[in-house]
Length: 604
Image (cartoon, rainbow, N blue to C red):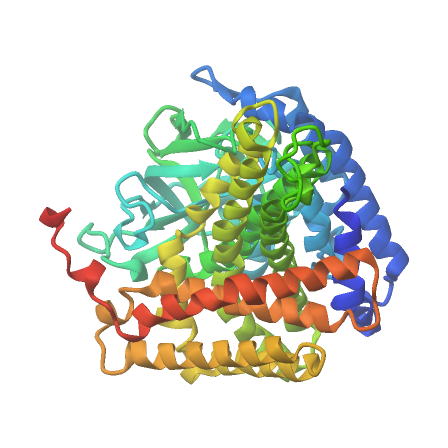
């Protein structure tokens, strides 16, 4: 099956993306230009990514002590992606961008994620450059961000450390002011960094001329001590190779050394690294430590980095979604072609009767509908969030503010729902294949392995849950949750009378979410309220996807194509099989059930 008809439906029939053409920023665009971008990305993904997905899984990156070697296919894919202009697709014309709506950019990138998430596209590089376009100096934008958009340089984000993991308040990498003067001092206040960073995707490779690391580190106080907590964290540009103010390499290697590669369950085509900063492997004149340039103000590093982190979280959600979709398409094709068993009922045990294809069995249809409801629902949510980004950047002041708040609330869901439930879709894809699905003769086992990472990186499931219940639904006196609820109620009204039972179920789910949110915090300490944050996240995510499916279903009025029938069935499936689960999840949230929190470790 092709992804394109689904993307076209969601963009044009549901989200009405052509309406953006009336805005000044997008007046040069039309359905034809949007389709041309999608055509190009679909072709590159088909030719440069999909044929090599298994290759990059089996031929992992190799480190010889000096450099990392990747298959030639990875180099070819990176070059094709950079030349497509997608690294700067949503940027201004005057810096080489296409001024595409972010909604179209997100849809176009979906083709690459589905073809081979392991090869990857430009998520980190674009995110790195986008951060610098907001928080960097004019020269930092020109030297680093613009060269990333052009594909000359690539980018990373360096947050975690071996001893700290997701606990950024425990970051130990230190940055001390550099007293020596160099030609490139104009690039920003210069520091020397020493420390170690772990789990750095694309931290070392030869795909681009240079790698621009964005590194969180702490500046010691007057007594040489690191400020405790996240308030002491600052952000630095640390290039692999030093760069002059003209954007050209100086010929000097910065003191950033690859300590080793992490060998992963999935995503094997992307290097994942442990980096040592300032260990002395590549000594520099004028002092010790890796050269870094301050971004923004001292102590505001985490605030700056959240610009990239939030973008990456939505990107991870899209990657998880497309892995789920890839597994769904593979298992659907298998189910249509695999004969096994006979129809139940009269004569069903007659071995002389011909076998039927497994798609004719009710339980196979159940597993296919589950995959469709998770994956296509998650894709619709991802594109809805992308549409909010466009509204935030080009809408009226009031609409932009509403979109900002909705994005705050929906970002943990856009990351967490696909990373959990599209992983479940991949598990169901293996199940449909039976024993064959557990072998490397079919792609579904790789899709599962690749997807398993997505519940972990860019903020674990537990972190997303605490962010949602501990911050996002409470911020600005709960206004974001109220705005989201209002949109859900609008959809419920629009869906009636055709979808009256589902509209009623959505209203009830929204009321349950509201009660649980209040009861979780009513007189509670944070530890009590957040003890069951993950069940809250799961219930919230299911309510959001139910809303998305109902909105999609309501847009199908009068459409009786097979595709529309499938979407209606997916909507009914989600409301009847999935949404009822939220009662059990919210029960432990509302009661602040202490079973897990109070159990002493000895009892395990």
